[in-house]
Structure formats: C-alpha cells, structure tokens
Length: 330
Ligand code: UDP
Image 1 (tube, rainbow, N blue to C red):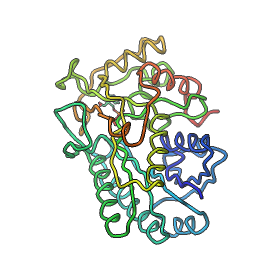
Image 2: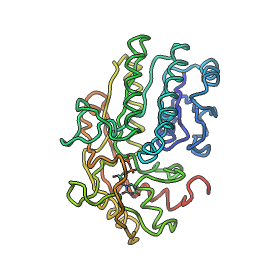
Image 3: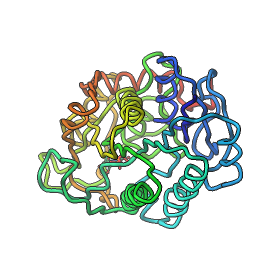
C-alpha cells in the first residue's frame, strides 16, 4: 500500500516525501506543477502531473494505485494574494479539496492528513495559541483552510472518513542534505525573501508594518523547520492508520520572533548587512502568532529537532546560497 502526497512537488510536500521515503514508505506524488517543481520530487516516488480539481484524473490515480492514506498539501498559501484574489483561494483550496474528497469517498480511501494553518486563528490576544482557542481568520487564506477543516468534519460524519488537520505556524529551512529547499515564484515568505538580499537578487528587505503592539513594532511569528513539520505528517498518518480519531494539532516551536529579529538572525548567519526598509502593513496580517504544540507532542509523540532559529535560518541559507534561482539552476 502506498501513501499519496498531493502537492508533493511543493515546499513542505517535497520535504515530507523525502522523510517518507527515508522511512521506507511507498510514495505516490501528484502535483499540477503550478507552484511546485518536478525537480523537487524524490526520484523514488511515482509521479502524476494532475490538478486535484480534475476528478477523472484523480479517479484514474486511485484506480491504478493502492492508496492507504493521503497527505494533502495541494493549495494556495499566500496571505497577501488571498486578500486581492480571494476566489483563487476558494477555487484551489476549497473546490480542490471538495473534488478530492469526492474521489476519496468513491474509492473508499478513508484517511487524510492535511495542511491547515495558524491563520485559522486570526488575531488572538493570548499566546501561545491552543487548538481549543477561537478561530476567526483575518485573511481569506485562513478562511479557506478553516472551511477545509469543517468540510472534512461533515464528510467524516457522513462517510466515516478520518482526518488530521495540522495547523502550521511559519515553515522555513531546508533539507539537511541541501538537495531540496524553499522556492516560490514570486517569493513572498519572510526567510527566503531576506536571503535574496545576500544572494544579490534584492537590494533590501521590506518590513511590513512597524506599529504593531509587539516589542519592536513588527509582527511576531513562530518559525518551525520544514523537516520537523514533515515528521509530524508521518506521525499523524500513522496515528490515523492505528485507528486515531479526527484531530487538529498546532505545529510550532512555541517561541515568537519579530520580523526585525529574523532579519538580525539572517545577518548573523550570512555575514551580510541585509538592509531593511519599513513599509506599510500587509493586509490580513495578525500581530502575533505563537503556537502551543503540547498536544502534538503528547498525542503524536512529535519531537521537533530544529528548535533554534539560527539553525533553521542556517539550513535555509545552505539551500539558497547554492540555489539562488531555486530549481531553475542545478
Ligand atoms: N514579512 C515582511 N516582509 C516580507 C515578507 C513578510 O515583513 O517581505 C512579514 C509578514 O508581514 C509577516 C511575517 O513576515 O508578519 C511572516 O510572513 P510570511 O509571509 O513569511 O508568513 P505568514 O506569517 O504570512 O504565513
């Protein structure tokens, strides 16, 4: 039996495929390659180029492969874009997941682990955030992810599907081997954007907002290494395969860093002065998002290994300095 990884050519998906294959699992990857890269797919995974909104293509995959569980990363994930193009997020994230679940139900594939997000919580005043805290997204990205969680809940009641939603905080870093890393076009995420400066691809980094109610006025986020996230997906899938109930887990390190602190850390790691410019706030950004991941540790046995920001940024730099144009260059 194989594990199907949807979006397995993307950033977090490709890292999860590497961890699955290292653990000796049989892996099938499906990706439409709109934001993912063929070169990011592990050579030992069987690859299908398809869009999850394409029901016949999904049906054909489920008929051909013997799938015991699905890990679903195939979604759009940029907060800023979700505010200017919300319908893209409803289409790709919600309609895509609807078609996927239709096909899974039709083929009696009953277990799914999927990417949710800290953006489901919105603006919370108490840190760290618990899974039981209120969910009130401030951006359309978080809204569609919360709707995906709820869709799973209703499909579970009706058809017995079981799911785990993993609410990630800020994924960053790269595979320790340096063979895969983070690459988006255009790049919008903080760590890779910062590292474009020492790579000579950008003159300065823009700091989105300096008047938030935080210690230096910039947004606070909880940065988590992509390999630790990948491990959590495998633990969550095994939990479902053992008979675990529907569940939701936060994944973060429990420590918040401001945008300015992340830039300072990247200066230390790269030895480059990395100029920063204050810019207006980005629409939809909550002031702070810091996770409590105690539940994932207790229930899944999750143990993040890269819990130090400098190590995380250094692993990202190890990838970016050798791949300044992402997968476009060797
Ligand atoms: N950010 C920034 N400049 C950038 C990109 C991001 O100041 O060029 C800030 C952004 O406003 C947020 C934090 O960095 O507070 C992390 O943003 P990112 O897009 O990496 O992840 P998100 O928190 O939106 O998932």
